[in-house]
Image (cartoon, rainbow, N blue to C red; front, side, top):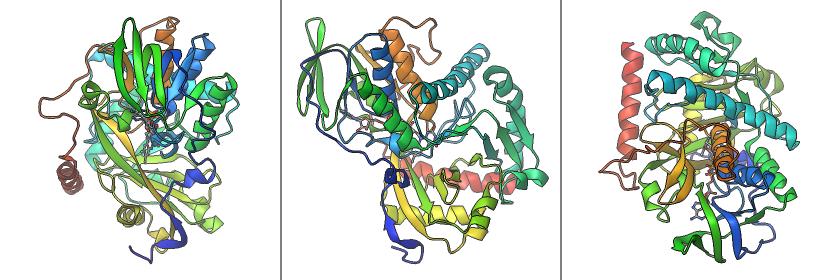
Amino acid sequence: MHPDIFHKDFTPTPFWWEAYRPTAGELVNVPRTARVAIVGGGYAGLSAALELTKHGVDAVVLEANELGFGASTRNGGAVSGGVNVGKSFTGKTIEVDGGRVDRILSDAADAFALIDRLVEEEKIDCFWEKPGRFVGAWARKHYAAQSRRVATLNAAAQSGAYMVPRDRQREEVASDYYFGGMVVERSGKLHPALYYKGLLDACRRRGVAICAKAAVTRIGRDGNKWRVETARGVLSAGDVVVATNGYTGSLTPALRCRVVPIASHIIATEELPPDLAGSLIPRAKTLSDTKRVLCYYRMSPDGRRMVFGGRARFTQVDATVSAPILQRYMIDRFPQLRGVKVTHAWTGNVAFTLDALPHMGHRDGLHYCLGCNGSGVAMMTYLGWQTARKIARVANYACSFDTEEFPDHPLYSGNPWFLPVVGGYYRLRDHLDRLLG
Ligand SMILES: Cc1cc2nc3c(=O)[nH]c(=O)nc-3n(C[C@H](O)[C@H](O)[C@H](O)COP(=O)(O)OP(=O)(O)OC[C@H]3O[C@@H](n4cnc5c(N)ncnc54)[C@H](O)[C@@H]3O)c2cc1C
């Protein structure tokens, strides 16, 4: 423990949980039958349940832990509409063949619009704002690569993207850390746990059974139905949706070996003096950077604290390990925050896929929506929604993420033992990028 960085009220839980803390609530019994059983009660699971119910299809959500245990109440709350799609955990944006890239970006733009619609229709009070995002270029060649992407983003996702050269970047961020960067106007931010709670309330208003502490332990065929065994009883369902993202486990081995769970870590600072707080990100955007071991940050909804995240480690580690690393990364960008104390530090899992794309589809008879690749507030909400529309047979077009291909690798069966090595290697590559380019 580095006592000098921790505030006296430090807690190793998400800052967002001050507003909504995951709870099992009054335990809802697991019903004996449902038309659709959804495994996992994060954004994807809840948004699938909500959309199914709107079409008269009865759905049950089965969550292993408290409601909101997963990444959906732990994330940074930055909402993107395409700029992150196809970005692998190497930080590199993968190349997708010409025609498909436009469809992917168009779906990502629709995911952003879906958040807008849900927040309005369900009256979700979650500090939803659309100030845009600034993606700082860590090296000169990254700035050049960003410049080449601007036109595609604007044409296919109406991103409102443009470049900001280094001599003007202080209009976006009170730091000289980057070689300029890209602004993406069509980006937003929200309070992730309040957005989660809003989806939960919307489901409850429509009578969806949401069962906490109901880990699904086995799924098997029972005639033309599914027999879904949970920690709190057995359910018979017509369809099953797996929405477990970075927490996908041995229940679904064929899916587990297609997603790599990677930890992401965040700290929140104590309340800053108003002048300092107001000066750090003058236009209140969310920020991220082009490093392989990237950081992402924003001010808290009240504008008083820095909420700063990144891959302090690629694996789950204690907050006493991740917080000093993140604090150092924060001071690299904002030397003016030296001496500021950390009040919260936490971690959660994201799921990367081997082709860096989110996926929905059907495998061994089960529906799935998985693979946020680090950016899933909009995307996982959207994939849950798309999966529901497919099951309810109301989808009027095929989502570009709904494909047969969901790559695996002969050397990977779901245990990401290689992550610490990968983390070290990418830190080195980041260092070389800055040095050489
Ligand atoms: C620290 C951090 C920062 C992030 N920052 C951002 C950001 O700024 N912007 C952004 O867009 N995205 C961000 N993300 C990603 C985003 O949070 C996720 O993509 C999104 O929340 C995933 O939602 P989900 O519903 O798919 O999964 P989750 O919310 O992770 O839910 C999956 C649930 O499945 C449950 N489960 C697993 N196995 C079983 C089982 N057998 N039975 C029953 N339940 C089971 C788990 O308990 C878990 O609650 C971040 C993630 C983290 C961890």
